[in-house]
Length: 316
Length: 317
Image (cartoon, rainbow over all chains, first blue to last red; front, side, top):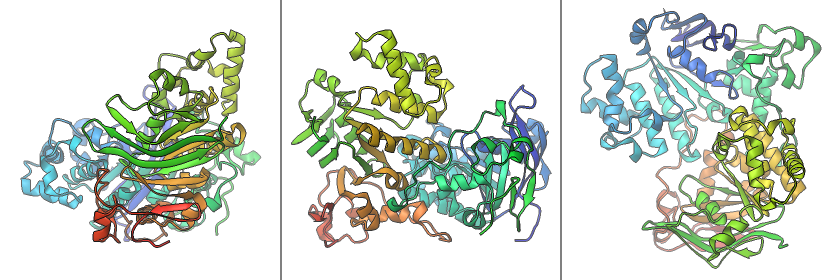
């Protein structure tokens, strides 16, 4: 991949709790995502994954740092300036059916972003092409949302996202609530979209699901990026103890390999009581005295792989 | 008390004016055993669980040879008899623990209400029992949690509280309907570990409904695979995971993300949708790659290798 201008780049991105200074939801996130690339973003509830997507879409305002989409800075833009920029990115919500107006037919729903963006009227033929690209037949255009199955609604949401020809698609938990027999179809659809040069950010708490489609993974803990790198390198040898615990927590479909102990106890601490030093130290199996006092910086490991830990786990 | 916590023979359920939801189910869960039920949306898993608790709507009809909870027959039982079984007979936990509690009442008020059967118990004893129940499911500082409202607890902690509430009446059977689907994988591992401990310590039977093979593999002793309202395969977890026999079970295993080798270019799917239960022939015939004319016309026979049974025309024992 040639290193052109990334579709999405954030530098030192921070988001604070509204009206409370220095209560960070997102802390110092710097990453870049190129066209034709899928980045998986993983972490427990409260890790800030969803907020990151919202910040990129301009739905929450960063307190520090920059966001650029196709080289154009977003942070600090007024709502009016934001509108044309927002057309470059589309967000797929966690519950697609809840993001549809129940009184509109699928055709109107899919065409809605085009009307809002002021690109003009969408012809029925264009709508049919859009839903067919998302793996639906044109007959769904005349249906109401309630008549669609969970998988079909997910595909209709993808068709709607494609309507504005975005450079970036952000999907928040794209397969939550779907049966395993259909979730593969949705993920394959993302692979097709990637082929056309679109950048995708897949947000999930389920590593097993996004492993197969993500080129790189970003792991968040308490609003901080703790590890980012190529998916296969991270699965082969996770460097951050938190990444390792997340991988170990995935239940394996093999009754001969049951765990005797849960790999990670406790829960993500509150952002109102951030631990000192490394924020993961209280749950870390490998904690040493330094971790309690001193916040770790980012260490680069190999190509495009970095970890925020004083004592990264060994490779291989 | 009977060693069989739940016994079901030839049970079918219909909703008014609609196709059947569940057909000809045979199932037994022993005390101290964890039985998993796996299947897609619309396979009838939840209808079956609701039948066991007597929670089916009035429009539902239930027919069968036997549906017995700890030796007590439930088919044709009066509402009062069903009510008496809920709690001591069977209790249930759900996917969304937040919806299981009233937002207006504290955890302590909920548990006091759950102990309505023991109203002659002193306030002191009642409180001690509630604190002990919360302690048993790993709630730190349980006495302080009694005054907490549900919104003050995380999803994982609320699921622990829901499990404590379900176990309060010492049920013969605990039904867990997708208990970890709404939780993070790290919390899921903790809750599964807790369920396994409960089985070992309290000797309760657990019926675990899930659509995730990993969850079934982690804690179940046996598993029943449901498709279009019927059980299509059942047996020990080790046998089914080592050698799934029914084509539907095989297709489900092929779709499981954790079993797919890294580097697969396309992810597998099962084409088509679950049909309404009750058609002629095998329910899976319309999506099965092995199906022939016989499969579409004639109900498939049961076959078995030891205690592993499956229902298919095409797979030889």
